[in-house]
Image (cartoon, rainbow, N blue to C red):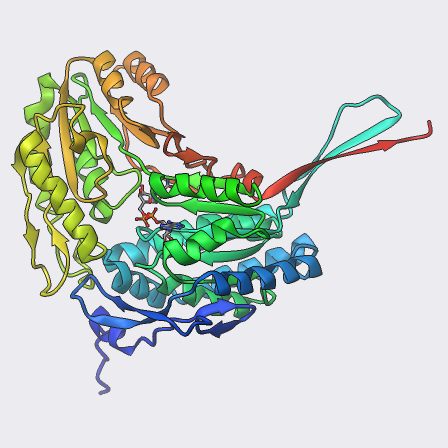
Length: 499
Ligand code: NAD
């Protein structure tokens, strides 16, 4: 009888990975021209993963030149839509075939649980790429209702060279929300991953080439924000920069555009979601669980993290008790263990910043649970689910984006006060509300100043709907057909007929 091989654990599979750390420019892996690298450590246990190219302005310039040459050549931009679609499908298929490897790279690099990277991040990226590939030959341009002897067409054309600058919390997925519509509309791209999480972006370079994306169309330039990111923002031959990250750095990209060539900008920035539970919500257990998941999923490193729970005084105690029970499921653990639901924080520096907010919270409010670091794996970065209550809505922990598993519970009386408190930050990305009264629910969804509003649910998601923020949460939208607008110029062409 032949022995059945036991499946390798994620730890064993991680040992077998070979890690690429070079830039991908004009169809090949290359070191930074300066030769500089930085050491990439895993937040799981602090182990050294690899050396990553520390690219700077010279490498960005090389990538932009390759992207421009490919764009002018028309090898991608002028490819018949059917052919571009076929190549993007192939790219999606290759990513899907490498799900395990990409999920492992993501988890090792930034610490999220392998159960999430393998079941959410990679599959959602594949779906996003396929969705935009399908759109390529289904979106039509327009003809204006002009007088009979004139034709005016309104067409969309690719911008040209697009810089894509992305954060570390969903490295592959945030990149794909930009890569897919940018490629679908015929642009060449230069992708700058966050320095904390370069590995999946770098790996995509080889998969893009294998799929048949022509050299120069898809470039990946890793490096630090103040070097590689800034150089992309200031480059005179980049037509648009599409950024996801903090509001502070989003504002810098507006300055870079103003100081250089007024390049087009898309900004997906920070958030401080107000998640409201009203007294007439009948399903408090569901609402409390959604509130817990909304803040603790992805270690709270979410732009739409429901970081402010705005709860009616009449149900506050009940909600807090249920939240405590749910939190027992979300205790920090080894991200490579498939049962872990709360992984490692991205790095020691960010862990310290979140702990500083927890210290501040102890002065501004009452600690209800959590509040300490854990050694879930020796040498790693882990923080317990933490809840503060009796938080004044103007407190810093209720106004500033903490980007960790830290919830501020603010007590209110009634829907009007809840809406006022929810709208009381500089952000406007996500908002949520629970009520069993349809009029109250509508009043709240209309009154909440946010790009994405969840009513009797939280963190619903699909590629078919736009995602982005009001106020200082950004400019423009990712996802859905609306995203195509960002990556294209609108051209009006007048044709006078001799009729
Ligand atoms: P960040 O702003 O520090 O970095 C984002 C990117 O900008 C990285 O690639 C970084 O290298 C680069 N960068 C940093 N400093 C730069 C500079 N001076 N010049 C040019 N580029 C620079 O953000 P982060 O810490 O990576 O990610 C967390 C932030 O991202 C949070 O604020 C979160 O809310 C936001 N986010 C928003 C969305 C959304 O869709 N709205 C989604 C995910 C994350």
